Image (cartoon, rainbow, N blue to C red; front, side, top):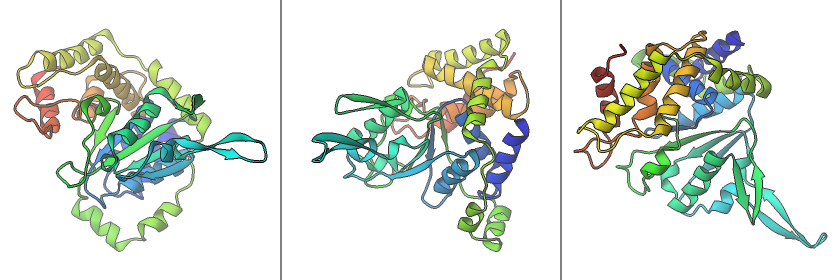
Length: 305
């Protein structure tokens, strides 16, 4: 099983060149049963990462392009009257796939955003009074452009908190971009990716994550990190209990990817920026763009021992 995880990382790494750390964090996010937010400029590989993950993990895939005129029914599905049976028949929307790419989520209105985020939180949707379960596994990768770009509706803090991690892929290194230019087209490399993990294997790995041992000393380290944000004047508000639970789950998933059955402080430090950067805001930063620097500050301020 661990060999399959390594093979999955390697397969995606051949498609999205030079982004091994981001790929590993995305896999940890899936294993921890979280959802992923990627904030970056267009053309950085956000869509490629989601497609490669779906192929490697053998998950059904749907891409939803969020626009200002997107309606909740376009995401969840609608009931249409069938004259032959004289009944309303439900036509499922794209949300019923196992891996969803919610592209440019901050271009849609808050009403459409909340339809997706409710599905993420509950694992089910309610349409026309009937509740329908979403598939298992179910994983959302939402992308958003920087809020400074025009025509965007920023996600409020309560909705950002639903995402386990936020990543920024950034520009590739010069060597990786040279390989990209000299090699086969990205679409050709993507088509060559074969499923490595199946649904049952993925569910089994997700079930292993809570079994990874976290010592009392490590839990105390997480509590010190969280409490430091609550008591510091540098943070506008502290991390929530959901954030501390997410940090522990992500650290366990990272340890599993490292082929260990116990968590060490380095696992927490590896995932902390991705888990907390979108949940923190500096007191003197009303725009909320300083989360990454706050995460680095937090790691420097709080010692593991």
